[in-house]
Amino acid sequence: MRIGILGLGRIGAFHAETLSRLDAVESLVVADPFADAAQTAAERFGAEVAASPEAVLAAGVDGVVVAAATDAHPALILAAVEAGVPVFCEKPVARTMPEGVEVLKAVQGGDVPVQIGYNRRFDAGFTAARAAVRRGELGKLHTVRSTTLDPAPPPAAYIAASGGIFRDCSVHDFDIIRWVTGREVTEVYAVGGNRGARYIEEAGDADTTGAILTLDDSTIAVVSNSRHNARGYDVRMELHGFADSVAVGLDDKLPLRSLEPGVTFPAGTPHDFFMDRFTAAYRAELTAFTEVVAGRLPSPCTVEDALEAGWIAEACTLSLHEHRPVRIEEVRTV
Image 1 (cartoon, one colour):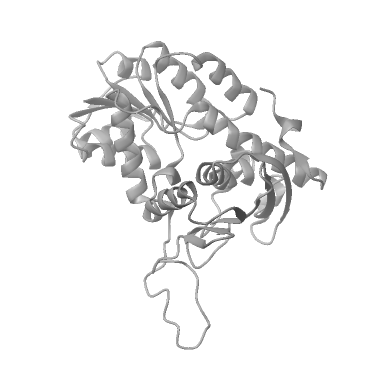
Image 2 (spheres, helix red, strand yellow; image 1 turned 30 degrees about the vertical axis):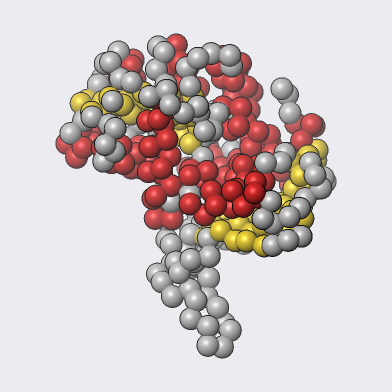
């Protein structure tokens, strides 16, 4: 099949490389506002260069991958849908929830599939955790712990436009908690602090946060996030039930050092970047998209799915600023 890519920054170029290696993909058509980025991708991956997103959609593509700046996501998703082209878009759907709701209203009930990029749904560990919960291996859940710790904060310009740590980082935890447990979040309580880069505090954000989520069956989920984890990129989940407990992310590249006598785990080089930690998941995610394009698979992460994680992020942001528990229904508008 022929796939278009809109946006050739860090993640767009990474997706181009991944797609170029998939057997189902015969050719790529790329576009980026910066001509040099598009040309570099074309030379590396044998892609065709188009002058604009419109030109990509008119080039006979079977599907399109949106990896452009967040502000462009709504218009590009809707342009692809209007052209009848299945679309994969990196999260978030839009910078703000009202914009995201407008996208949802525009695509609901249509027959053009839209897949939003939440890659943890395609990680082998998280997939196994979901299967264990579905099979009842853990019994009734009582506690879930989800962690995302970045090795270093992103630049000040990124922080200023990110919407805050809950919308930018924690939202991955929120999505995977919903997906693995199959439950919805009803209430949150969030705290945060600033112990590192001053520009994060100046932007009105926190660099380290914790959130308690109450799920609709009274399971408690604890989410921990930080922009500062010098040992590496740390993504984990624990699920504790009345019959068993399991963990995701406890491999030899875990960025955590044990002080127990005689313990050599973890023995490997720590994960240092999200592309290192989730290389296989990204490949599986884009492979799934080719199945969506072929009509053999429904979207594994819809716009509605993505917005559900967004409402949790909105509630946590409000909770942090107002120092109180917030129910999801307080922020939800649809």
